Length: 539
Image (cartoon, rainbow, N blue to C red):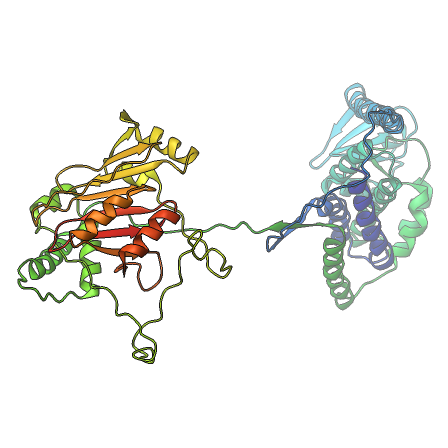
């Protein structure tokens, strides 16, 4: 509040100073009347204006605070209480004075003789008073009025006050004075407002044809410092000298417009100096437009059926598969609902991709068409000393299997997907076996003991049975599978073997099985020979 009052006072002081220097002695009094009222209102409003500037977000680094001393001592400051009490007393006194003056004017109007005319009501008072005006009521001394000792020029002067409703300005500034009684600038601008009212009334009398010298003599005769209500307009002796000076002044239109234009930069300066500036950080809002498609469209189903038929009808040992068409088939198949999948062509039974050619030093290592080998996987006890190898990606969440309708078991007991997810989060070393077929939902078995790996029986071409397990100690099973002609493929997340895998020997497979945690092993019997997939985490 203190800052606001200081800004208000500074604005009002600058506007009053501008008025005193450039406007007070000029004779465009109607403009001056509105300038003075606007000066008060502008001084109230300008400090309340806030200009907002949006800036880029700033990241703050919290630094530890050292040598912080916290005390519980509380001291009461009496100064604000004293200031508030003094202000309250002044508010009550000035408010009482304002209300008392209103009642006094009301009582004078009720108790004394009134004479009504077209544009004002004369109130005849028995006590000697200077003619003064309150709205449309003009107060005269009864004896002088009845004997017609009051000149027409004086009556016209007071009629101008009533006609132009100068009492509205007086009431406004008097009310403002009640609230800000302690501010001396309010008294200065109140004096200027009342003086300008006299300029307006003098101008009306002189325009009516009264000679300047005669009117000045009348003002000297009727001007007085006699007591009258501060809420009224009266012929006051203290204003006479300035009024005589202004009566003789004539301002050209050019001078008038130049001085009016000076107000624009003045107001701009006040806005810049006394309004508030606020900086607001922009919000990091990312508006994303996401289109959710629940089912595949008819056009997409037709496209899928065309591609699926193309590969389902290919026979023979040599099948040419285009990568773009394979990716498109997977995308369209994932879009379709269960009912659409049943009515559509069955998904083609693609054979596993052939292993990538092996790069032999001095033989084919100069062929630019052969891609470089993938980044090796970090294997504890094998190549964990190489600091340049990046860490493996995280393994999938159990929620992915739950979405596929999987059934979960823990140590032989059926559990919910939420419970399975909680157990796996708490203990990443749990052994997990995932069984998937096209005819039923996946079955997920979690166990604290090693899960014995069992070779799947041969299945028909239309089915795809897979056994998946993690961290199993089944070295003997690997040896048995190798004797039966199985081939081992490593999927380590590298850029070249992420989808096709890299064929490894039995010895390498046993070494990986022994040293790698979180390993998933898939055994497939759908083809001429058994395929054993060793998948690292996330592959």
